[in-house]
Length: 173
Ligand SMILES: [Zn+2]
Ligand SMILES: [Zn+2]
Image (cartoon, rainbow, N blue to C red; front, side, top):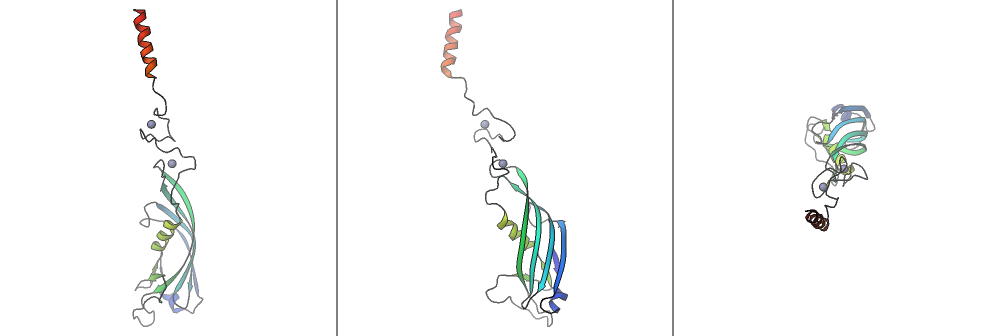
């Protein structure tokens, strides 16, 4: 997800570049797996505007049963990116005051990995659940209740019955 925008920065405002994305998302987020979609770069007065529509295959950890489950996230990324060096003179530049855009590095490379990572964080559920009716883990024995039933909820033999059984046995003697 690195784009060299040197040529685009030299072009008139309104010039565009389109790219298709279909790649592994290694190193972006440990739970993100694959990204696909389209990226459009638009030359603006100040820099480059990114307009991307991507689908990310990710894995989340269920907050109840602690197992991994797959999640497909569709992200619409719209970010203005600013150069750190002037494309014509090579002198360093700072982003316009008050802007919070992404920076294009000294070699005119626009790296979208960090942007995607941020969007993934803000678009992932705060309390991930593998499914609405997830049974979770037994608080007592730790068994994953989606996979098996545990014995904790079942009442043990009533101690009074135990006593009675003892009496019956004595009577039989
Ligand atoms: Zn779960
Ligand atoms: Zn249990």
